[in-house]
Length: 127
Image: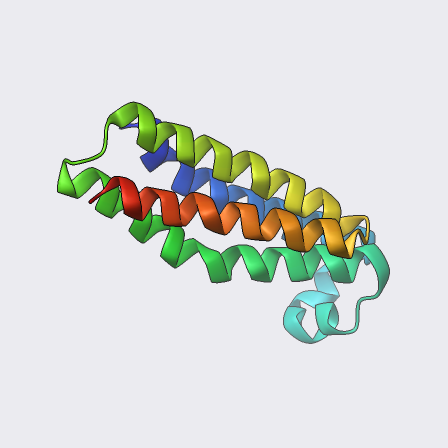
């Protein structure tokens, strides 16, 4: 399996990390597990922002996974290029999560845009 393929799993794990850390900050208990979405909807501060980062990560996952798979499937992109853009995307996702958690809204938006450019680059590499 290539790094880029593995990066799809890493992105999912980053989302799970956001969820777990958000719940820890919000003092989530087993009793809250009866309706965790409602519990997290009431979270505030860093916990709410990490929950939002998790949601954003799941929103971008399908298009990112498609870009990685298409880049591999066409055979037009070099493996080094695919892995480069996958690594760049993951590094930007980590920065995005940090910026989101720390309420750096403008920086977060810039990082999100750069991450989306990595996805576009994967599609272009497949041409």
